[in-house]
Image 1: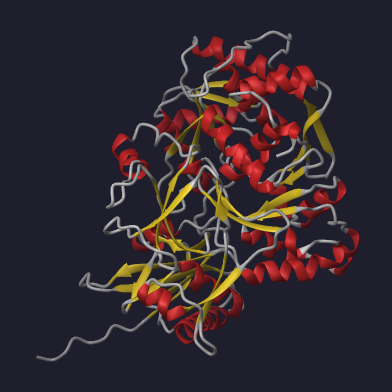
Image 2 (image 1 turned 30 degrees about the horizontal axis):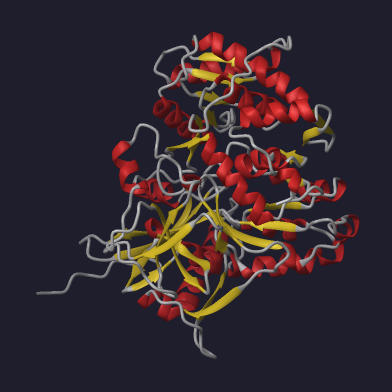
Length: 586
């Protein structure tokens, strides 16, 4: 790390105060709006606003350190609310206001978070406070929430400047809910600072670094990676709303080009989206030559996505070696493994049958069916990885697929108000007595000290004795079938009537049309999966656009799609189902 990144702060309260005193006029954050104009805030301005919010919050809660929900649209107001919670010694609960046009889809997750926290305190802005009060009163069963509009709090330069303990609970970072209902991961200031050390080291941050990100600030990658780590490292960062990015993906790259960002990144789908939307004119206008590191994670990293992005934006000055695949999860704060800055990325081609039938990663022979997997890099110096048989807890050797277990100072204290689940997830011990470890629920293997992802245990589909990872089935469909929406499908398994075997179900969004159009799409999915993966689907369902359930970070919630399928709650446009075989005649 650069010398400018080293400091003696033990919490983000102490750190922001130090930066406000030593570098008061330095721009800490810049936020780019829908029209691509920018607002900025210095360290001193953020410190003043945060202390004003903290004073109001302390008075409203009478000093009780109960969690406070942050219900802001992305922007500078969110930052004042977040650091205001830190200054008040109150656990912050980053969330996102429900979309008034899609309440049925966006309100359930927020209601689940509110119920889980047991808190009535909400920080938001005056333009949405009335709506928040109305919606939350309903969600709380008639109790009136304590809603504080932070943008109208008078900044009189006063407010608490208390130094909080490193072990004080700073965040309840709710999991994305990709495989279950959201759970509040308890993160202290010490754990946040520890992970920022790892990110700054892994990313090679230095005095000339500058971030440029669109990631959701209520999600771990956007919050810890995009907001806290830049403050920790003392580098400026330019932020953009994820809504702006999804509407106009190239606005992200224009922002990176305009502000000469050296660090940027996002999930795999973001790079695919930019490639599909970019025109030759867009590519000619961009200058991406300043980019030193482009991290990609949060979902399986695909070699073909990296190759397409490099080919498309190479003429804009983008360098292939800047790609930085990494792995992390909320339960470990964020970052777990990564490569070397500007060290390039690595992929391996492994035999598909050995991986799926025997859980072993070995190099594929010529003409042998294979899978290409991208390395997520190695753990940092203070992190231990173990690949463990999830059934026996036996540690496994290199090349063997098992559950990823983690031991690190960044591992959280557990789930909020869930002691039994916390003990099972955060207190795992191997069959040899080594531990405690965090059980991630992710499957992977290690080769030459580097981690490769193979999928999630809860998503694993087993048909005729062969293991299939939903992401591979979905990838094959999206690369071959016309008429389905990319990153808007779910593959999952259901049991047959006897409960003796699994059946493959695929649900995909498509645009409304006629029966002939639907039949062509259904046939395309069935044929593609049957031929390319040798697994015949049992059922294929086409649904309306924007109805596949997703997490706050845009990942498909396969478990919830499965639940909706079984409950008959999908907004179906068309369906194909394998004919039922007649029972044998006695």
